[in-house]
Length: 188
Image (cartoon, rainbow, N blue to C red):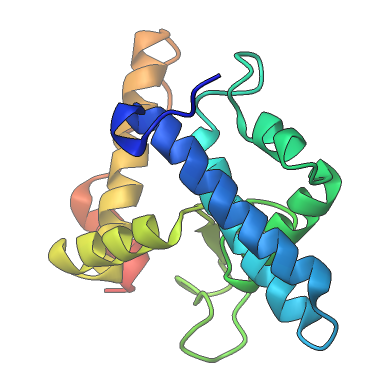
């Protein structure tokens, strides 16, 4: 059987070759390391994380997914997924246990703050790639900052819930007005 030249391969075949090279290289460094075992494991997790995200849409049912790639490289999928998880936890790409939770403040600027009195702010955790995180932060800046985006988010949720209740004939709770939301969020 003749080996195909790079110019004869499709873009998806080139991507598979690139994935195999990157993952296999990171896997070899991880397996051979003794001193930098954790660091090389995280690098292996990063490579797997990136290629898993690219192959996620294809899935394992078509036989073209990430797990097939691991099988072809003879890499135990449990090891790959363990290092993906460690990489995601280290770089805060994965929620701890629950994706949505309420959190009380501890007084520093990085923690969620109380909206008013004894009410706690609900925290939503979005699992985003590094690129998506950069885009999201840029979008928040463009829209006027965290307080403005929080106000927009609350107004959006209230409006959609109001519309859904009315569409279902439930009625009930009246949609809060923009000023009421602003007062709750900003404490103004």
